[in-house]
Image (cartoon, rainbow, N blue to C red; front, top):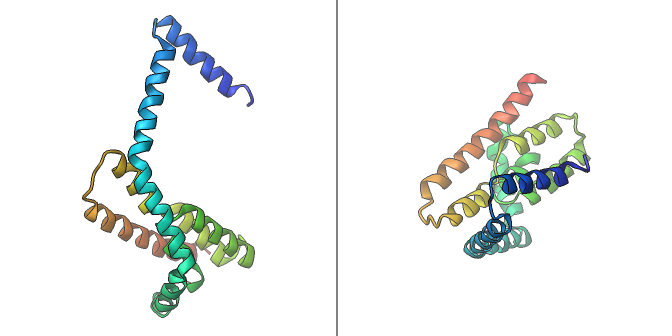
Length: 168
């Protein structure tokens, strides 16, 4: 296992030598392109990070969960999973922390633990993905993509609970 990366690097260098490619020149060109891409994406990524931090610190997530809990109860969606489901499209790290909290509080083999795990595996960090991919190619009009992605996240969370309920 320890030799995988050195072998891959060695293989790339050997292939470059056989094909008579200026490996170092190609490497530096790729590094320059990577820095240019980072420069393009950095403002939107910083904005996303600041927004997630403000969402967590302001208590808005807690208020939103309290407001949506009665609706979720009627749907049969456990209100304990609501914070994770709402944070997942915004922050992968934040939703993983909430997943760990659910697993710690209820156990990984509990209904809530299984539902939380399936939700984590079947939903996307929508805002991060849109920020990275659309920002990289400078697409500004994201309205339809955002709506479709958020609907997909909602459906995935609801179907995750239904599936776990059906299989348990």
